[in-house]
Amino acid sequence: MIAPSILSADFANLATEMRAVEGSDWLHVDVMDAHFVPNLTLGLPVVESLLAATDIPMDCHLMIDDPGRWAPPYAEAGAYNVTFHAEATDDPRAVARDIRAAGAKAGLAIKPGTPLDPYLEILRDVDTLLVMSVEPGFGGQSFIPEVLGKVRTVRSLVDSGELSILVEIDGGINADTIEQAAEAGVDCFVAGSAVYGAADPGRAVAALREQAAAHWPTATVGAE
Ligand code: DX5
Ligand code: ZN
Image (cartoon, rainbow, N blue to C red; front, side, top):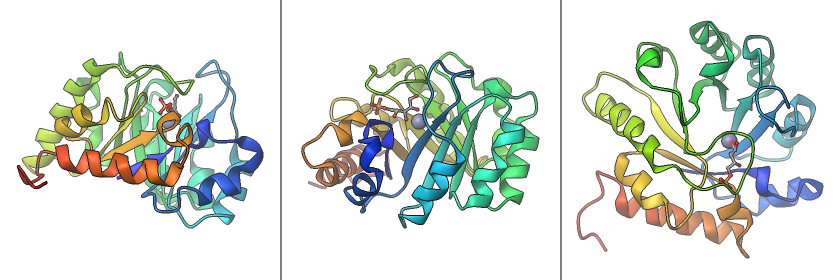
């Protein structure tokens, strides 16, 4: 799955920018509050307008403090998946429960330096694990390959049937980095600058998807 991040799109033309990636699996929307991360983007009113203007399932990545208070309304508004940060709450299980009760899939995000171990149990109660492969806050940063160890760990737990969860990666994904992420077992690839920095964003999504599919662990060897 490819989830273009509109953080790298033209904010004055978001409806057009969403149409440019119509074949995408998810549309990734980065909500930043200038507290949890040193950047400010958009909030619920803009998300509501975006939801009304597209059929692409919306993946809201909340980089905000106090997700217990602010996350459920994104689910109520109709987002498909609502992801909050483990570092922003003392009670991730409660936040996930409230997001699900409000009608969305619940995602847990961890920063590059956040270990997986303390959250392994909680992964039973969420739908998505978002592994950040850059420090959250800005698009266009370089991929941090060390986070792939966390992806491999979760992939093997999913493959052995111990967990049922989608593994998403976010930050620095492009034609040079997507193959190693696919080989580690990522299910969903967020890409901002690699999609919206391309001359044809729709074609960039298709190319990334093909590249990832060819390198996914279950891909038939020599299928090309
Ligand atoms: C960064 C955001 C990402 C960002 C990724 O904090 O969470 O979703 O848009 O941008 P690229 O793909 O350019 O690294
Ligand atoms: Zn994001």
